[in-house]
Amino acid sequence: MSRMLLGPGPSNVPERVLQALAQPLLGHLDPAFLAVVDEVQVRLRRIFGTENAMTLPLSATGSAGMEACLCNLLEPGDDVVVGVAGVFGERMCEVASRIGGRVTRVEAEWGTPLDPDAMAEAMARVRPRVAAFVHAETSTGVCQPVEPIAAAAREAGVMLVLDCVTSLGGIRVSLDEWGIDAAYSGTQKCLSCPPGLSPVSFSARAMQRVQSRSQPVQSWYLDLTLLAGYFGQERVYHHTAPVSMVTALCEALRIVEEEGLEARERRHREAAAALIETLGGLGFEPLVDEAYRLPPLTTLRLPESILTRGEADVRRSLLDDHGIEVGGGLGKLAGRVWRVGLMGHNARVENVERLASALRTIVS
Ligand SMILES: *Cc1c(COP(=O)(O)O)cnc(C)c1O
Image (tube, rainbow, N blue to C red; front, side):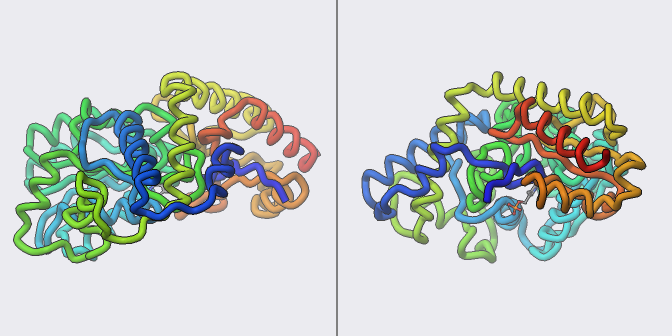
């Protein structure tokens, strides 16, 4: 059975990545595999826009990347300011508070970006150890401008954690230029690799903070000082690296760099513009103002023609009869919008045409 995955992730995987997954296993300390790990780290640095030595594929999905960033930088009782304008900002609050962080929320309406002045005000008032927010909010389709919040964090001397799960490999991410201290992503969105790894990156300042903690990181598995043994110079055992997934990620990153980051961003923008135009003809309307739209993931308000048929039934028919997956609304937006992902390999105008023609068949 083949599916076209136009939801919020996973996205489809190119044939070359599937082939990489099927390679005979190597040992996780085999020099031939360590060369693959090296290559993944070098390529991830370029795609993240950073020279951070501590840039690596964590052996878990994006949510574990979130947890790793927060649990290494925060100690129980530390203040943290979190921007919340969707499900993943909410998740950051939940993770931070379970670590013992004292969370100050800065909220914005779902479908709109965070207000940098409100983030600046909270950072100046609370003086938190860390501030965290989402670059590409997959639950709403908002792309958050990073620079104004990063400037305010610099002014307040606050470390910044950025969720790049749905931006990395789709639109520009530039950690060093922005001054981000810790960032995480996932393989199954714009990198077009199966779910299973979380690329993460930590600045030298973040690593100093981790090294000067008064108590060890609560999570043994996610403790960066231990992970550094395998992903640093020594290459000693910490846990068994998921060899096949790392090999697949390496191939996915080669594909990203063969295309080039700028060309890739352009392709995402063109596909999203075609989606809005073409589905606009069927009565769908974008939820987010043009200035803040996230090309890899578009949220569309549903027209009467879909609502009267039952939006969940229409999605079921897209899946069963046409092999196309799109995402429903999440949280507060459930039943009101669809989330259409045109991520990585899938960000193509021909996929928009296939979706539109299937929809025309269903609603006609
Ligand atoms: C998908 C996603 C995550 C969580 O990633 P998982 O791989 O599902 O654990 C976190 N943040 C954002 C913005 C996402 O889109």
